[in-house]
Amino acid sequence: MGLPTKVYTLNPKACSVIELYGFLDTATRDWTDGLLSNIFREINKPTDKKERRYILYDGDVDALWIENMVCLNLKKKEFVFRSFVFL
Image 1: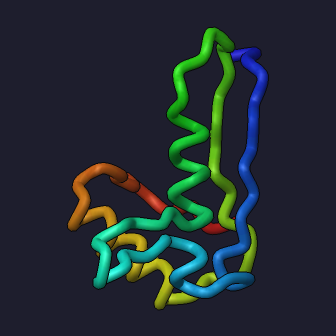
Image 2: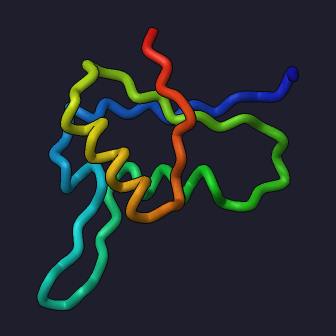
């Protein structure tokens, strides 16, 4: 405990699904990161700092973006949410 905390605040309803997750250009097969992809990359950069890092989804709960998040997690098998906490 007692570690500094860095919070990345994101309102998923303030942007489109493409802006949130990113997209694949079907013609060139190039991937463009979305906001969430960029945040995950930033959080996972190696650092010497001892700090906690959290993503705060600030906004109304929407079944569509939660469903998209779960589907993204299952397909990529990279991001696993053990629980959602609603305050």
